Length: 64
Image (cartoon, rainbow, N blue to C red; front, top):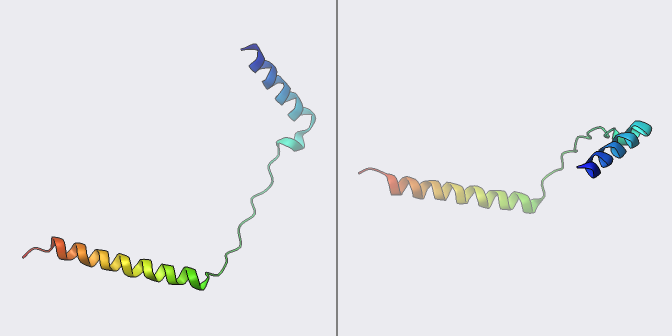
């Protein structure tokens, strides 16, 4: 228990002597990037696959 107290005391002392160490840098918003052609193709394939899966589920659970 005593080593933990010494470590905490050391950390608090360092931050008290050098307060700039404890300050975080501000958040920089990421700049949106355009989608590549490959990403557009994969998104289209995934969309068509989702529609096909929904149509299959609809067909499987359809009441007669």
